[in-house]
Image (cartoon, rainbow, N blue to C red; front, side, top):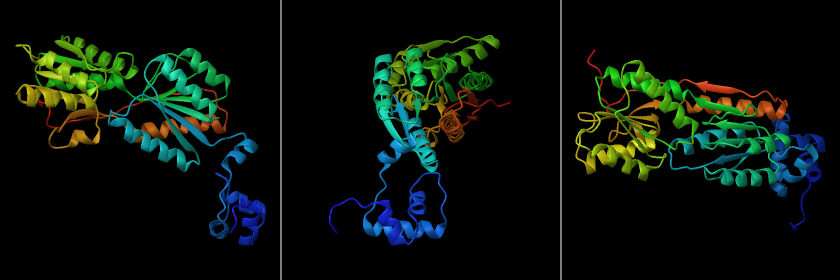
Length: 337
């Protein structure tokens, strides 16, 4: 066969169906019978036909592409979440373009500019925040944005998170019930709403029960910085008897330092609690008590909001917080009561 491009008309003729029927087979969201589908795809394979997605987007005004911008992947939670988001969007007939970005406003603006150049139908911002100007630009371009695992004070942006404030409260109640008196906290990146809400809920619940933070360090959602934070916190003579770490990736690093560098026992001398419930948290080596982020429900809500905004032109922003359970394992002492 020569190298000329095969057309949908030729594919339809070989399959014995009309061109319109053949086109529906390769149009996301369009219906066709199982028999027609099989005939057309078999003919397309024989002819080497591939639908021209770019040409279709010019006709329909829809690219069927979603831009997904993420700041970092070293947090075990995000690779799993991105896989779930990509799979859910593909089932809806959309393709995902992933863009990496720093947390600085200029980095995010650059990533979003590039995403908009691809004429995407929507944007999911995972682990990053958007400035008011950036949100306005997306809104003006008619591109809906949903924040995933982040919130911010902008009425134009939809957001889906776990209930981080409530999660922080649960950890405080659990540690107090376990009889801990010297309770520390290792914070994430302080520009993140997830960090802010987890700490706020944690501290407010401690205060309700007559306690305050005994020690505080910052790990910036970074394993190396979390290790140094653990050294700072636990090399003091009167070190905390419990620590809440703002995510599991940092909590794993903290446990390693406590055990292997400082020779302390978890949970006999120090109880450690994280947040996310990533797969490694359940490994026997860590057995980490943690607040589970309901990733499947978060993804379902994010995709639902975005598709509704794209296909039905819904401009009403949604703010959804989903409760996640405290998963009790062996890294923290449990109350005898």
